[in-house]
Length: 330
Image (cartoon, rainbow, N blue to C red; front, side, top):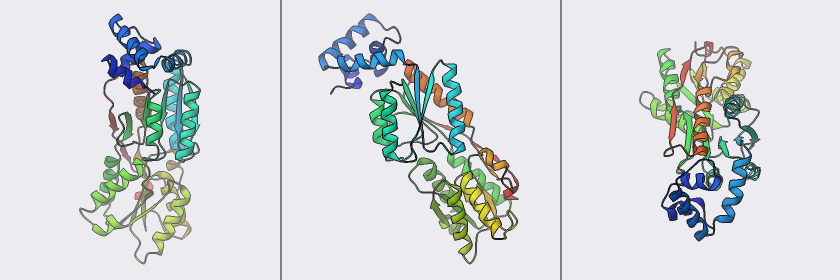
């Protein structure tokens, strides 16, 4: 079955130009229109384009799929996307993938069946989400937010995870912490992978044992609690724990304090994301602040540009975070 890229190749124009002709969303030259329609007719694409054109012109609707709706970090991104959508006259349909690639695929297909004009996706699996994204890109623009997928030409807007981890380690080193441990998530998503890679790479330069002192589970409070128990089972626990996100950090702190340890007097703890919870945990969590409004706004801007056919080549945008020092690191 012919795809829109096949029509673009046959007509000798860009995919964006084909989309403009077939949807009627923007004016194009008569020559371009004639070339596209001729190519679509030749390749048997006309039936597909009619269905696509009708839905794209009518719905003014976007889709968004997030891994876990209970995670306050993702909800903050949803709020920014919702505001951007409303400002452009779009409605937003939100789905939860439950961190499951099969469910994510069903949610993406459900959004496409509801004739959304574009999708914002926070992928649940760096490898497992790839085919779902490729499938969706054949019909509508898709922008990846917060997490990236390697090997796919699409706009991806993320924080600079390495810069955040380096800032944390520099801060701990400045507090004379030398024996570190890292508690993160399994390497199924880019955020988990990039934060661990940055930790190991940077720490290895000045303390090799710290680079290998790593525990991986999930981005949850419960995993943080379990990991802290494992850390304390070591005869010589670290003097600081670098956590892959704030939920893990909250769990680590709860267990350490329940076991009678002082944070940060005995063990310092840091997080990543700067969700609202950080300010209310005792002690408040030192963390990496993600500029969520900037991330969400840039992701939405790129999606609208794709829908309107005004964007250039796909880009991977990295937005720099900042360090927020609170009581958990001393």
